[in-house]
Length: 182
Image (cartoon, rainbow, N blue to C red; front, side, top):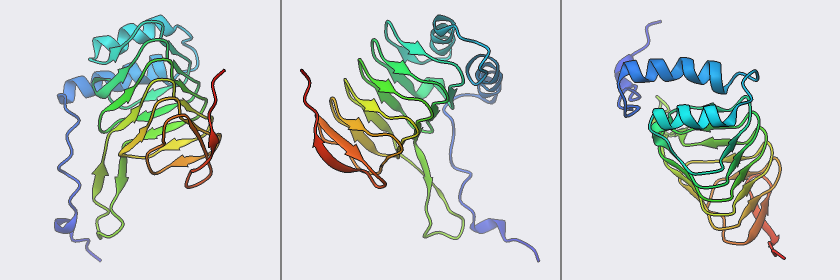
């Protein structure tokens, strides 16, 4: 049975950089980011900046982090990206100051249109405003803004914006209480 490829509309996406840049990043990402053998956060910051990321001061990037496209990444001052975080930034990901993205969390800028036979690609940016904490093993979906000092609890899924100073939990994430900072 032959597959009619004409109905598939996934060829329009472009990473924003040349094939050579993407190819080089693939290996830098594999050897220096996804590998648990490189604990040097300062080297990772230098490499990200050299590929076009905007990285603030005091940023801590732990081992085994996977970043799709550094040229689509902005990280503010004193933010922390934990072990095995996956930033699948098909669109821009903007992380504010003093944010924490805990172990195994995923920031996913892409999804697929289940209404289309070809599951066409849908992308949208993600914004984590200042003071946001994304809990371990949590997922932030495309077109979500986590507003200032909001928290996404462990193993939760943010499919809609998170309001400021509010703690969210579950799948899909629901507001469970206000965040009070002492």
